[in-house]
Every structure is written in C-alpha cells, then in structure tokens.
Image 1 (cartoon, rainbow, N blue to C red):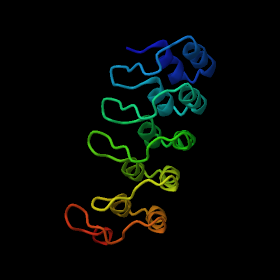
Image 2 (image 1 turned 45 degrees about the vertical axis):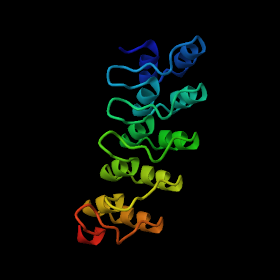
Image 3 (image 1 turned 90 degrees about the vertical axis):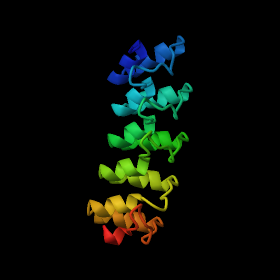
Length: 168
C-alpha cells in the first residue's frame, strides 16, 4: 500500500507533505517494495520534500526490500542535490544493499561522477579487494579513475580474482 504521504512525496507536493506530517502521517510507512516516503522523494529528486521529511525525523537509513537506503536511490538516479542533502544530514556513506552493492559501486557503475565526488568528499570508504576503482577501470572512465586515485584509492588493490585495476 501506498499512503497519501507516498503519493505526495512521489509528486513533489511539499505543502501536502508538510500538512500530512504535521497531522501525524506515518513517515516510516513502507509500500510493498519496502519504500518509505523518503525513498520515494529521493527517487524522484524532490529535494524540498526530502529535506522536509528529514527535518521531521524520517529515517535516513531505512532500507527497502532490496536493502537500498534513500541515499542509494538518489545516487542511482544521479540526483546530486538530494545526495548532497542526505549526506549533509548524516546519511551513511557505507551502507550496502542486500547483494553487497555499496553507494560507490552503484555510482561508479552508472558513471555518476558528481555523486562519486560527493560520496568521496564525505569520506566514503574505498575498500581493499573488489573496489570501485576496478569498476571505473573496467568502464574505461579515466576522469573517474583520476578522481579516485587523488582520493587515495589503492592502485595495487587486488580484486577477488587477484587482479589489480591495471589488469582489468
């Protein structure tokens, strides 16, 4: 079920969202996919609605059925301003979906450079092992590779097959 708050969040109706929340609408109600109104607003890039929901205490770390947080959703859709707002409000840069996809993995796979830079500037971890640098190299994204190296990515890190990014 979609609630009126889900519908208002989806359509970016800030005034309606504020009215519903002030009258006790459940900010954490999940639809059948496990998405809260904050997930829906993030997916649609409605910055004002995202900010209103967060300021009224919506859970920034709520995971949908796939384990994606509102930040994952915004990052996957390249909604840079929403990503930046959620990061400013303290959303975790380390959350991973149920299949282990991190925010950096998702942004790298989708070639969302501004999202990657926002995540890195907020301290997103570039782990050893299967790294976003491997993915950026695989997609031959030289700008992204350069940005990751400047932020301290390990150019000699081995993936699960024992390959460095240079071997990809």
